[in-house]
Length: 178
Image (tube, rainbow, N blue to C red; front, top):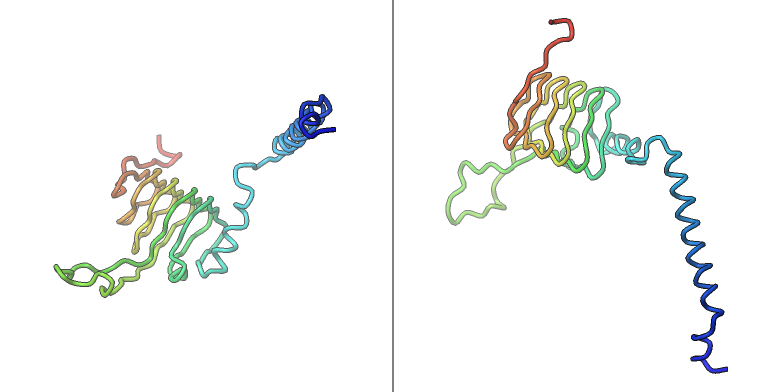
């Protein structure tokens, strides 16, 4: 029997169907498993805070960290996170920056000194996706930083801050006030 006649035979058609059925069955089984999961958004979100603490980040309670959040690993001990903080995916925390006040034409940028300052995230604040928090910033209790914001100055408590640079756009009232 020649190879070309084997390729043309009807024996391969059921075999291909079997392979496709098997793959679809596996996908269906995986999909059913996903539906049973209560928190399928990010299965590793409980592990990230533990890694942050091992790197030197200071915390006084529970906090959540989304996927792909970067922080200044060398200066991790300068980041303080209080209880109930939520950091969404792909944020960036910088504790150092170059001092460019004496930078002139012809100077070597790599020779400029660093200024290292702490970052403090107060109780219950929320940092939106892809936000950047610069050195020396304190984000107040219950504050919400909008998506894609660049936080260069302190954010007051219980407000929404958005933009680059982030500025408060709305302040929250107490539930007791009417």
